[in-house]
Length: 396
Image (cartoon, rainbow, N blue to C red; front, side, top):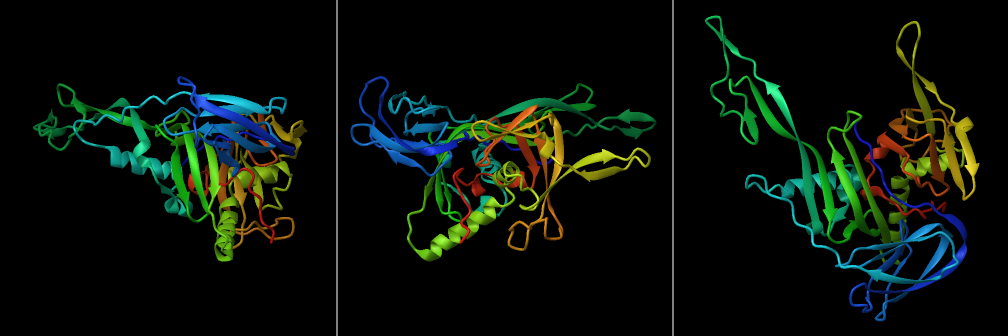
């Protein structure tokens, strides 16, 4: 398994439009906090507080999360389940200063940690490589290490076993057995990151500046399932570029569509609409032939496991701890082929894992309980190709 990732958004149901107002102040001094960013998590909907700390934001769907963020303060998240309370009084607490990572034996690993973080957070595909993290100085890192041993094969001289006497070929944080027959090393098993301020990511291909309150980030190099696993949680605010140039707008929309197709959001929306084949997808399960014992792949029809419930949720039951192979068929532009009318060609392969007996998907393609994860091609799309949850394909 190459990679699994988890992203955090909150689902929503459409109802209309309602303004929610509020006042933001310092929890200790009670003074108003101007220029605090107020946004609906995962969307392009946001505003800032005025000199009196006041804000007004338009909510078009519930439930949702309103995030209040300001440099120097811990972010505040308001869960809006209904519209009985349309005015909020918000107090922000000052953010505790985090210590930077510790240098190991005088060797500064910060540059390496930042490069590693960017690869797994922004992505190492076309989109990730063109994304720009503007304030990596706010990041702090830590690593967990595990002791492991390695046997040294002895040389045979005059019928006797002679272990290595020259140990200069091994350096670093190692410990030798007394007879030099084994060495013990501290092996990094994961990378963790935190941020003392919101991260700012420039997405020039997609036309967004992305503000991220990073809640959790970890790369596990030896996860329980035996493969590399990366996951991150956060709150996301998409700020579209301010441009009226038709050329730029067309370029952004073209790139957004490319990033959208064969993404987790695209797959989940297609599954919700029961249009997997029309969207270029096929699910396969692996079976073992009873006679030849060979591995075979059989198309899996998921419809009987689907149940629509209230709040525009699609419930998937009975697939706990199962995983399937997911094939995506697109044209040269990456657009999906309608498999009900077109012949499939060479697919792009991913895998999908159902981690719970009851998994949920919203109509906007969001997985509210993070119970479905991906590996393969879809998982390679990270923050660099991320789109707002209210993104819609422009048919024109």
